[in-house]
Image 1 (tube, one colour):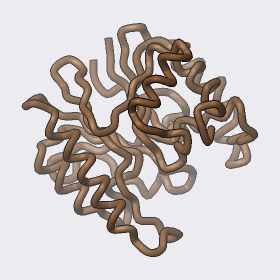
Image 2 (spheres, rainbow, N blue to C red):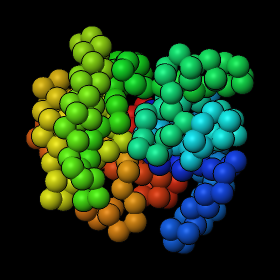
Image 3 (cartoon, helix red, strand yellow):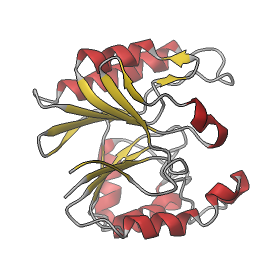
Image 4 (tube, one colour):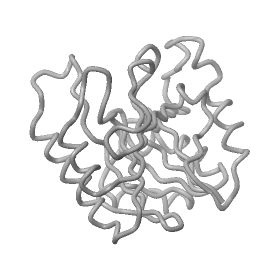
Length: 228
């Protein structure tokens, strides 16, 4: 029994979105993901930190989720900036149930547990140069969603999972960092960063929180073990 995390699977089994156009690091990425996941066990849990499927709706994403469902263990989904298929919790749960998908749940405006840990998360916010103007409304919404999740921890030690990095070389999302510190989060995993941006990721202890980049290409498509 173990807890894992990986983000940015960027699956597109039903759409024309080949990832190898982004460089040889993405060659055979679906096969590599399958090989890595099949080494896990049925009592393991993997948090998928956003950008899971390129599908723009449930129809286009169905084959991607059937693939994920075929992997051993349970999976929790965090929303990413490219998860256009994302919908309300009720509609997503109904979609999974109607299609016999039994090992996938969402981590969004809620909290799950793993052993003694509370698992909390949301998409987060990352101000990039091509985002103009800075969207204060979206930031506040994501901070609120993160806090709502953290408040449900019930005194358990907390592991947090975001899609966007809350800190980066030359960038800090103070509002997100403040919540992680205030709720004494032990570790925070995040994705979103690819290619040359890996080297600008900030990892390890910052303040009182340990940070880890878990983008799939950074991990060479092998889920990162967080704890037993």
